[in-house]
Image 1: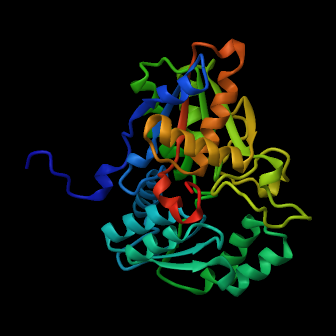
Image 2: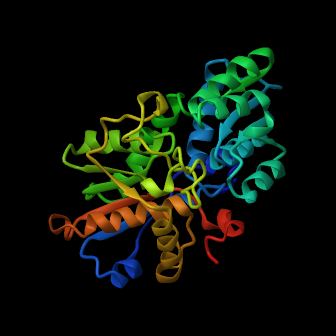
Length: 328
């Protein structure tokens, strides 16, 4: 009847592009910085795409059946997307979530009926994190072997190695950008968490035009844990390093051959950029989006990039960071 959708699953994707005219004017930028506003997804983040894709892929393969519980580890947004999709499809949901993320994430997941557990509250994970100095990949392996292997009627999503993660971006995010720019995109800028967004989107755009440059964004050295500072005062939630780190810490969902260069952004620059864009263009974005725009500004400043279209993927809404002081 009319244009009435029947499920939240029908609302994922087709997010708009917006040129950040106010930000460009403020910084006298000579390129076109175009944000892909992923907070237009039903649960306000790019992770809605992979949440839907990974659940439906599991259903098709018979790995997820009525009455099962979906389980995942996450820094937040994937958990929220999975909680919402699981609720709409009638599955239970449980997530092991990093301690330092904003309280909004825990509350939203619980509002959808999911169970949110801090990583350090699960003894097996806490022990592994302590022994490996925060190795998240090792912590996931520990969870699978020591906890989930003893349970039945669960599906562990495992976004860091699930091929449905980058695949959905190749099928949706990349084509949307190509179509909405009429193929006139010169540079793509995206942060890397699991790496699915930049890998899938970048792969599609490179197939359409091999000359498109793909730029990855990772935290700067002062915004990363170290031996001397295990927990930095300022971090960029959900953004992880992919250059200068051991191979065993790189998610399988990140194609390290897809990007042409990378930019390291410090957390304070990401925060300040997010605050600026709220005032110059009226969009409220999170830390990772601020980092991506800051990187795009650096790329735009290069003389060879004047007049080019730089598409920046803005992963989520700033509403998820109000309790963190990002906009204080």
